[in-house]
Every structure is written in structure tokens, then in C-alpha cells.
Length: 554
Image 1 (tube, rainbow, N blue to C red):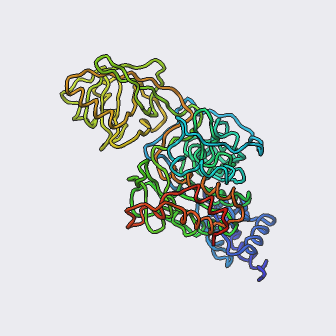
Image 2 (cartoon, helix red, strand yellow):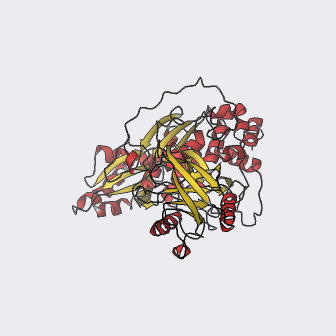
Image 3 (cartoon, rainbow, N blue to C red):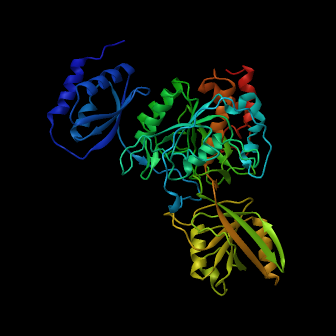
């Protein structure tokens, strides 16, 4: 092994010290070509020091450093070092959000510090009985059928790199192990501030390892797996430096899988190096293909050693938003996925439809961005097309509920147009099967209006009955919930991460490459797949775990 010349280190960094021109402080990620080069440079910079380069974090598992730079010329000089692989300025990609939007209500953005829950290895493996709150995706990937052979994930640890977590959530607190914040917001860095202020990370964590609830049937894919949360996204988006720190931490913690429901259209040498080092360390990386609905898989999902995940709906058909392409590996449930959100920030609804004096409770989904109505809001239903401004001309919805079809314009615009016409509430009926939730405001504020979605068949029948001369009304009440329904490849990704946790719980010896082979071999093929829209198909937990135990994996 070659020796890194200390004279070379000193000469390069002396060039840095010659310039006393100050500039605004910036953060950079420096990756080195070898472990030896990283160790030598890191030791020198920490012991001898360079005034314009401050080592903020040493990333030994990916041969990198996070530097705070106060002199623009300093970083240029560092680029000339022969051991330096890449110098990358901090940049931010958009923070992950569910396709239909979601915002925490302002009233619940106060959190208390929380200590990690002690590990409980005495938990018995549950038997899944589908209940009223069992997410459809759990059944679709056959998670429960894999629990006995995989001990429901008891032997696995999963790191989620996302917006944070609500560690006190009833479905998460037993499986939450520890968290770290790598994101520097306007308030500065705080390693302990891993509390979820967006909702996205908590939702992903619940799909992976939400505890099984015998009364309601809610569960994650691997309900006894342990969750670690690395907060890498915040008010500015997702930081490339924070993601690198998160991957480094995952390798350090020897987790089994890293789940990343985030990404963007391009990659970097630093990202590729970090992911490659995770592979070498035996950590499987799973990432979302993206929600742009185009034939281009996002990064890091598109990297060769990352499991790229696309989304299907409850009819096991590719969703309109799911990105695809040659790099796509597999698909999983990613539409109308119910999972955990920070306590009290979700919305439940009760909707009773009355037609000519006959009342019936119908399935409904509440929207975020409205006030809670414990006492039902009641209004006559008036069909209003798609809820466009022109659809309200010639009809009277003042003090009544507008009955609107989903489609063409946003939910927020439909409600805005209805309120402009003085409607007291809005009932949206879906234009496809199932239900969905969304957000009506961007800032977490709440409208004083009742808004719910009902199923397509119910809505179409109502329109038909009203046009035939029958009178219809709705009584809507809403309440706070610890759960919400999201759409996105972000929601598909934790299904696969949960299956990987089951696989590793069943057989710790498997390498990431072997796990990718298992996922591909045991997936259920889907068509049409002429452009690799589905990858190898729908992930199947039971078959994957059986193959993991068979020992027949190359």
C-alpha cells in the first residue's frame, strides 16, 4: 500500500493558508480515493488545522469529510490534492412529498424530546388477521405469510433517510431504536432534532415496521423490525451532504437496509461512492423511482446497486405518476397507502348520505387543511361537474354542498371555486376505484369547510339520482387521526424495504447482490412491460423469504 506523503499534504494545505480572503461560510463534501488518503488528510486537518477549512464531520465509512469553508480559494486548492476524488458543494433537492400533498396542521407543531424505547426481544411473532385498518398493500405483498419464517423481521434493523419520525407514535414507539438529525436548517444543526415536521418520514417508517394492532389489523410489512431514522430533509429540501452522512451512519450502525424515499434527476460522484461503500459493507439500499410519470428513473434509485422501486395501485396496475425505465427493479403498492403520521395530524371522517329520507353511511376520506367538525356539518348535495369556475354558473350552491368529480384541476382549486360560489362544503367523488386524501392548503392553515372524498360508484349514482329529481344531502364529521393515506413511489419503497428486512431477518448471511436476486426471482411478473414499466414485477414477501431460507441463492 502506498504511503501518503505528509509533505504533500502540508504543501497543498499551505496553498490554502496563503489566502486570507474571507467569504461567506459554505459546506462541502470531500470524498477521498482511498481509506489511507482519507485517514491521513483527516488526521492532519483535525490536529494541525487550517483556519479557512473546518472539519464539521468525519465520514470514515465512505472516506469523506464535511467541511465548513470560509474561504472560496481554500476549496479550490484542496481539489488539486491527488487523493481527492471529488469536492461537492452542498445542494438541495426537493423534499419528498406525497403526490396529493400533505401538511402538518399548525396547531400540532410542538414536540417534546423523547428517549429511545428499550429493545424488547421477547415480543412473539404475531399472526396477521386482516382487519378494518389493514393497509391493502400489506395483503398485496403477502407480508403476513412471511412472518413465521422471518420472525416478522425481529432480527433486522432498517435505517430510513427521510424527514424524521414521530417516535412516540403508538404504532412506532416499540420498534423505534434511535434517530439522528443530519439536516442543518435555519436554526442550525441539532443532532437530536430528528422529530418529523413534515409527516413523510413517519409514514414511510410505519409501512416498514409499524407494530401489528390485533384490534384494527394495522401493521407494517415487518412489524418486529427495528427502525433507525436519519433526518436528511427539511425546510430547504434534501441535502446531498446530509444523505451522505446518513449512509455513513447506516454503515457504522451495521443496519441491514437503508430506505430512501427521495431522489432527483441526476447523481454525483459523492452519491455513487457512498452507495457503493454501503454495498461493500453489506447494506442493501432501496430507493424510489420518482413521481414524475416519465420514463426516467430518479437517482439514487437508478444506480446499479440500488433497488429501484415503482408504484402500483390496488388493481396492481402502474400508477400514472410512477417513473420507469431500464433501471427499474421492482414495483410495490404506492397508491392510497394508509400509514402512520405524527400524532393527531391525520384526518378521519364519517359521511352519511340521505336520499329521500333514507340514510346510509358511506366510505369517505377527509382532506388535510380543514377544521375538525365533531358535530356533523349537514348540507344538500348539488352536482357541480369538475368544480371548475364555469361549472358553478347557473347553479345555486350557497349554503349547500357541492358534489364534484375528481379530475383536471387540483382539489384545492375545486374547493376554492366552491367557496367562491358560497358553498358550505364539498364532496368529491373519485374518478377511479378507491379513495385518496390530499391537502387543501400549502401552509398548514385550516379552512372552515367540510371536504371529503367518496367512492366513484357512490358519487356517480348520486349525480344520477339528483338529476332524476331525488333530494340528497350529506352529514360530514371529521376527527384527528394518527394515520393518513398517501400516494407516491415514496410509499412503494418502504414496502420493499420491509420485505428486505424480512429476508435479512430470515437469513443474515445474504449479501445485497443476493437480496436483489431474490427480489427479482420471486416477484410476480406484470404486463405490459415493453418499456420495463414494472421491472421484474410485484414484490412478494412470502416467496422471497422462502428463497432466502432455501440456501439456493447465487
